[in-house]
Length: 371
Image 1 (cartoon, rainbow, N blue to C red):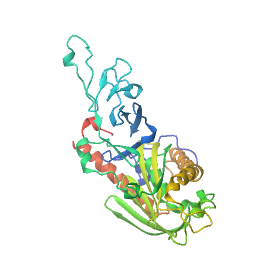
Image 2 (image 1 turned 90 degrees about the horizontal axis):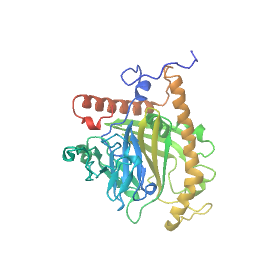
Image 3 (image 1 turned 90 degrees about the vertical axis):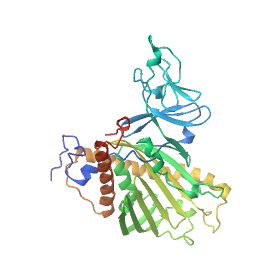
Image 4 (image 1 turned 135 degrees about the vertical axis):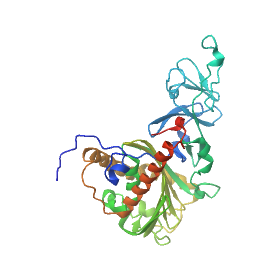
C-alpha cells in the first residue's frame, strides 16, 4: 500500500470514483430549514455573517427583536452588509449608507447620480424563523419554504418542557463526517473516559425515503459521573434508536433521553453543528429521587460545561483528524465495516444529485444558486 500523501486535491462531485469521494464533495439541499445561530447570541440591533455552502448571508436582528436575512452584499460596491449597522428595521451598508429593508429593497432616499429613481437595486432576502432558541434560515427557493417544516420537538415546548442543553460549534470537517460520527457507534473507544455508550451492536437499519432508521443494543449513560444522574433501574438504557432524517439527525433512549443535531454546511471542510440534548428527568446521585424540575436547568448548565461539551470535543478532534486524513489520502481504498454509514452516504449523495439536476433543469432560481 502506498502510504505517501496524495499531492492532488480531492476530486469534485462529478470527478469522484467511489461513494466516499462523492459524499465528501456534496453540499446539502438548500430547500430545507437550517439552524444558523442561537437566539441568545444575537442582541437586538446586531448583525452577523452566516454561511451556507459558500454562500454568505447577513443575519440581523432589529431593535424590536425580529430576525431578518439578506444576501451579504451591498448592491453598490458589493461590500458585506454584515460589516454594517442595524438602524431600526433596516440594515445599513458601512460605506455609502445605503440601507435595506427585510425584503432586500433599498429603504433610504439618498440621491445617487442625476436620475436616482432609476437606481433602486435590490438584493436577495431569505425566510427566517425562530424555534427552540435557534434561528432558522431557508437558503433555497423561498417559494418552497412553506413546503418544509422545522423538525417538531414537542418536548421542548409548553409548561412541561424537558430540560435541554443547547450547544453549537464550528468544526473543520465535511458535514457528512459529522453525520457518520454521531450515528456510527463503533467508536466507543474514543469516549472511553466519559462512556456515553458502550458495547454497541447494530440490531437493525432501514432506509425509508430520505430517512435512515437504525437501532443499537448498547449501554447508555455509564460514565463515572454522568451515570449517577440516570435512573438505570427505571429506564431501558440498553437500547437506542437513531435516525438520519435528511438533513437532520436524532436519537432516542426509552423516550426519556433524546437529542437532535442540525448541521450547517459551510464548505467542503467546514461545518457548524447545533446540538439539542434534552432529558425527561434526572435523579439525584446515589438516591432514587428525581431532581426537581426547577433545578433541572441548573443541572443542565453544569453538565453542559463539564460533561457534554468535553465529550463532543472528542468527536471534534476525531472528525477534524479524519478530514485531514481524507485530504491527504483521498484515493486510499475505502474501508467501512458499519453498513449504516454507507446508507447515510447514499442518501446524502442522492439528495445532492437530485438538487443539482433540478437546478440544471431550471428548477432553482439563479439568485439562490449554491453550485
